[in-house]
Length: 121
View 1: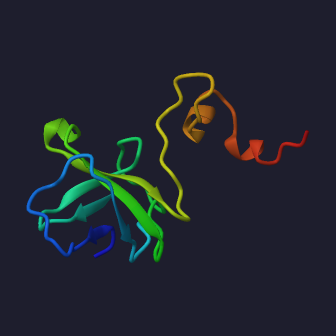
View 2: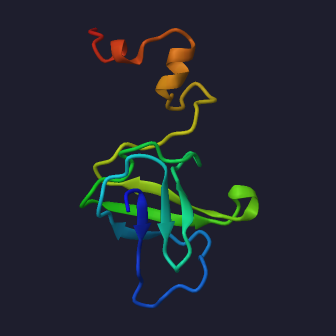
């Protein structure tokens, strides 16, 4: 099933282990919000900004780093994707001058992010 990722460990997990990162090989590129199953229970898979995946944050045949965050989803917990080689990365909205900005933040103040890519100095 698209956007549903299942891993099986040699020593089976019986419960999520908070904050312990692990790698897995991605079989299919995600096209939107995704789930993760590491112990027989389907759980949400969020991006590093703690928002649902949008697409292409997981790339087929590459490796992804995931951990369980028990504080998310009102204490129910969620898996969080920290990194996937070759994939787009989710970032939280910038709140300070030296933070990375989301393209939506630029659009909100009237800047076309695509135009910035064609800027010459």
